Image (tube, rainbow, N blue to C red; front, top):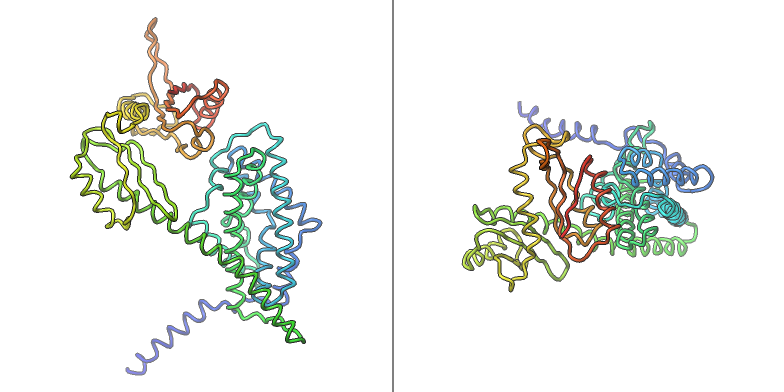
Length: 443
């Protein structure tokens, strides 16, 4: 009986070591190295495939088609040089690192040039949601790139090839950020360009790191030199290159993590602490930087007394928001600089949500509108709009009993908007929310 109990840990170790053994089904090292090295070079067919994939991805982003973007990522050969760099670092092959880095740089320049040319000549210049999603990296992009890279290099080292590589190409999304960078250059939007390049850099870096980790875990043979001084010099070059690349990325990735944590905690804080019957949050702005964190809230309804606000501020620490500045604007005093048009927009939205009885065909049967979330797109395309509401209303004719359904967009402006811009806004809204009849009211 005792022997059986002693055998349990051994049996479990055997079970898990067999199930999770990466050496099972592993291809020969020469085959793996040869495959990655070949795919690291962009000449001939690889280069033309990259150009065509970039054009397809740019079209997909331009017309806001996720299916087209996915198709472009499936045929993209961008993973090759990134894995080549990771393999070169893991095997002490400085020549492979240089080859991978050189070809990745060439591929990046060609990709951005191709997408810039496309977005320069296309008649469609509006940034759609598929494109806007590639302008600001988040912590999830880091996780996806790292785990996707792990899956990709494991698939490359197998004897039997599977559909993992195409899946990794879709998940890690290397192609769309380069197209977005091209859009930024073509339209002169440097924020789009820098954000997209940053996202591409983050994705590439963590795919490279995951490749290195698996190569070392599988104990690929390191390259040795007859001259020990040369070997030490190569090792120092590789180490220096890795440090120059990784150290800034660690700092940037840490910043992304901290910003995501702050925003999640702030959203929870607002939802739980400002749940009043007669006071409502109509606008919230979260600001995060390494030096300052701020929650800016605009309230309508009954004014919260100073004692309540002071009590709420004391609870910031319990949401891990210690040191965060809480700015609350409320009341109808001119001294508090409240944007009255913003309040009117919120009131109109609430009235129409409760009072509208006729919905568009794309509305659910339970009375809830299915209007898509367009805040980020609207902010990027028309930054002078500070607040908005979208509602379905009934227009009754005074000369007959006929009724018409209408989508009403009400927006408040921080400045002025030219007539051409207003027309562009209405056309974009009709296309984006699929409204047959739309009226935009701006103040």
